[in-house]
Structure formats: C-alpha cells, structure tokens
Image (cartoon, rainbow, N blue to C red; front, top):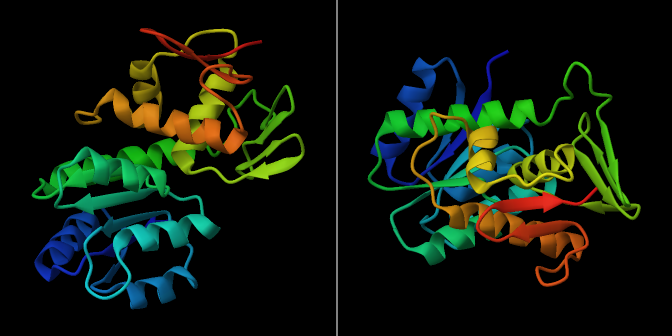
Length: 232
C-alpha cells in the first residue's frame, strides 16, 4: 500500500510542486495551504510522514502543527523553513521534528530525505528476523513492534528519530556508536549534508525525557570526540 504524506505550505507553487514530485514516486499526497484544514485531516487520517512549512498565515504555524502531531503520533515530520538559522532548526527538532530543509531547495533533495525518513521509520519500527521485538536494559523497556518505550514502568513519548537512536544505542550497548554511524544507520548513505549538532540535539532531548544528565549519565554516556554509548 502506498505511503500517505501530508504536505502543508501556504505557498501554493511550492506545495503543488512537492505534490507533483511525490505523486511521481507513487505516494498518496494530502495537500493543504492552511493549518486549520490540515489539523482536521491529521485527526482523521493515518499518515506515514508530514512535510510542514514553518511560516504559515493565521495563528497556527508549522511548529505548532508539529507539536500537535507529536502529542498523538510517531510518524516522521520534516520541516520546511525559509530561515537558515541554527535557532529555527533547533526549535523544530525540540518540538519533535525529525529533519528540516531550508528554502529554496531542490525537489529531488526533499524526495530523497522523505525516502530516507520513511525507510528509517519502517526499519526501526519493526523487529529483525532474529529479534523478539523487545529490548530491556536497566529499567528501560523498548517494544519495537508497538513503538512503545517504558522507563521504570512509565511511558516515554519519543519522536521516531529519538526512538531509532535509543534502539541503536541499546542494541550496541557496551560499544561506542559515533555520530557518523548514527547518521548512516538512521538516514542512509544518500542522506545530504548534516551537522553533528542535529544528533546532539536529539541526544539532549532523549536525556531530558529519561531524566538523565550529561555530567553523570545513568544511560546515555558521551565519549568525547568519539560518540555515544550505553553501558552494559
């Protein structure tokens, strides 16, 4: 069955162009020019991914839509922004976005990122052939099949990227996983230029949700100049 993708952008030419390229890849596209109608559809449709413009008219911007998605759903969210500043990117990641792309952009680059996010989401939302689908470690319980995470019997609400990072670290517990390896495992070789700050932000959010600290971590340890690890 074809993946369903939400596209929200008030610039009609951009939204129409994205729709055209995604339909050429056989995706089912739900296109909106304003947040109100998009939110109504989000509440009634099971999507596989959302592409959201940050700057929208009215009182609801793309960041607010992203936050509302994260209140209920775990599918990937890619933010479109005309602002090429680190603050805007970090804000998007903080609210639960998995990736961002700055306008103007090449449509084929956006398509490549969408494919990478969908591939990563499906890969780390399903157990491997020899995997029971359950990962347990020191009070941490990850159910890969249901995408649920419990810490000391309390649920953690993680974004798809946070879930993938935590799963990779737990599957490699005792070993250091570099930022470069995390990029490769999550987004793939074809993924475009990223900065290590993206992984750093996701790690920071994971620690905050887990009640962990960088100075005295119980779970995620930073190995300076190398990467991250979870001790056995």
